[in-house]
Amino acid sequence: MRHWVNLALLFSFSTLMVTGVLVFTLPFSQTNTRLHVVSGVVCVALVAKHVLSRLSYFRSIASRKSKAMGLARKASVLGFWAVVLVASLAAVPPTNWLMNQSYETRQRNQIVRVSSLVGFGELSPHQRIVVRKPKRESDARLSIHLGYSMSLDRLPATAVWVESTTGTMIETLYLDEGLAYSEVVPRTTSSGDGAVLRRSDVLPIWRHAYTMVSGVDPDGEVDGMTGATKNHRFELDQYLQPGKGNRFVVCVEFNLPGDSNDEWQETEWGQPSLLYTALIDVDRESPHAILELTGHGGGSEGDGNIRYDLENITTARKIADLFLAKLDLPHSKAAPTKE
Image (tube, rainbow, N blue to C red; front, side, top):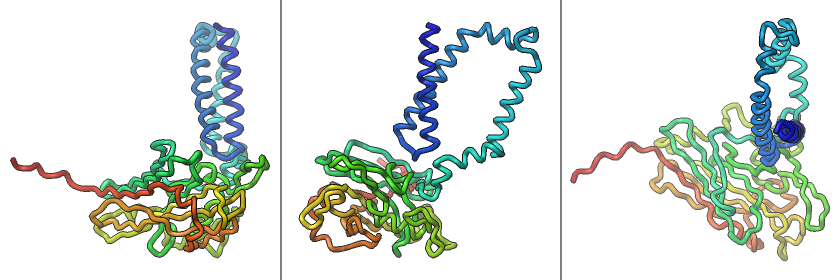
């Protein structure tokens, strides 16, 4: 059993080490993170098993009468670990230099993170849901249900965000993992050749709106001519307050590369990204709003402007089955009814 534990610990620790390096150097990956977490849990369990099997050894080491490890050596081990902890918590050299080499730090301008109040997941292989909870219980909760055609083999790249009625982005609620952590995403074409997809090519409308409020262009450079105004906030909360006449627009852009037609014949790109929108009036009686096809992103050379000529969009119209936004308003407990 001891040899089994040792070998299993070697393999799990090796996986933990490799995935840790990948987490440090590469964009976020759910698969890599899952491997890292599972390997960590297994490693902890095996270490616990190893320690329990050698309790007598650790008791002898901890004993004051231990000849193998005197008080000075024990103090040096504790002191070393204390220095590591304090240096890491205080971000003093060389720990801060080490973290500055990570992908997260080097590419922070490219990484798009949604609010911690946003939750999303898949209800089924062809259904996604995005939920934006309010900070205050007295405000409304926004849910966006994304239903795609059951005939799809894979779901399209998708972005969900909200805008003011004047067209300024308020908050990005959802962005596919493959596009959220890097501006440039490698992709394998049907011919087997490697291709590079950029967010500005795949989802040009969202990327243009994000550029205008973040001031970060598709190359990751900060543009001093754009960016949020002093009073702009990337938060939806103030719009979720009922009784104040608040209105905003829910936007969903998606793109399924390769769906070409007679007008859009480029094999790699096919038809352009499509934009679906719905106007949300927080104080209206009906809580539901269907997102309707509004425009497209102009293909691989899209500049972020919305095109409203939809007559040449054919099969791409069938990608979306039903996009539905729902606003859950807070309400007081109903009074008991009289019989």
